[in-house]
Length: 468
Ligand code: 5AD
Ligand code: SF4
Image (cartoon, rainbow, N blue to C red; front, side, top):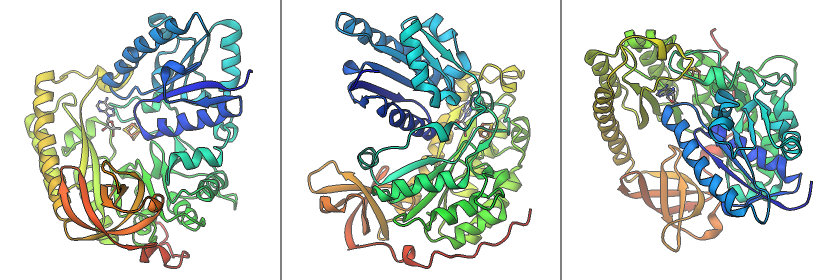
């Protein structure tokens, strides 16, 4: 393959796609591809797609229209390859090329490690499609990032530890597009975190579609839980903060709850999707937890970590959702007091049981419920942000702010915080006292510089054994 070709990757959807896009770029870097932020300069354009809701999938086709024009404009000078990766590729396969003939390459999330070979095939044969589920460990075959690439991406990094899902919620395409649950071995995850930390990463978010179902093989030859993995990740030199997402309430075991009490580097914020506050709808969604289960879980988590802030995902207008069911969702929001949440209108996904259910809800009803739910969530979020006024938080500064002399970082609760601070603090944690709140951002003044007190506590913490 010739040297120094340009690669443009655009990610849609979740953090896992962002992570995958980076790993694809890392792998292609060793084949002479340099990343560009300008699609019009690219020799290879990869759209890493999301299929979770209809709107997300449709965005891909409109983006394909744009990149097709770029390919045509460049045709006189060079050949531009267009690749569609991710969950739309997995779900639609060949159909994408039928609908968008400018596409050269279609491959699903399980094929990323085969990308150099697929590219060579597309160049040779004109086309390549690969939506097979891998039998080998794709993570072991993806090239690691260079130190320069890690530094360019900043002090916060995602690391995929688990992929796929066996839960089969009746609204969700993930078990079909990402396949069965698979956990990476502990040692390969820790090696990756060590590499990241050496190049300046201070915060790692362990990600997976069902991350708390993690059960990867440990160095002792036994499966490790997520709690154990977090404890191990926390002793990697340089790592100051840990997070994990996304969790299923059903897999929130005692040991993981205790980690929120015992691991000082684990941030006091948890994304715990509940989807609905109605037992009838939760059962129809095949969620394997009730409203009471969720509330009791929240209570145990808050008991373990009183400072914990919870965020969630909600779906409105699932088939059969009555006004009473929806009212139960609104009351759950009030009862839990989330610090923020994502809410979505139910989108029937082809091949999922929900799409076949009678009693599909009218679009207008869904829209009206979504508005009401979002208003309630926004009020809770504003109240949470107001409660931060006057408090001092450790902020991990990530980049320059909007105005000169300002930096932006994240609080332990993931809120963006702006403060006047020297650029040398980018990549460091400093204490900031919050002086002002504006919609979703906090503003503050620097209180002191240096790692937070909690992060210097001894790393060897005792975890309570799971009751399960
Ligand atoms: N329709 C609407 N929202 C969905 N989600 C997943 N599938 C659907 C769907 N078919 C939402 C859930 C999930 C989040 C990532 O996306 O709330 O937690
Ligand atoms: Fe989808 Fe999450 Fe349910 Fe798995 S647990 S099917 S990823 S919503």
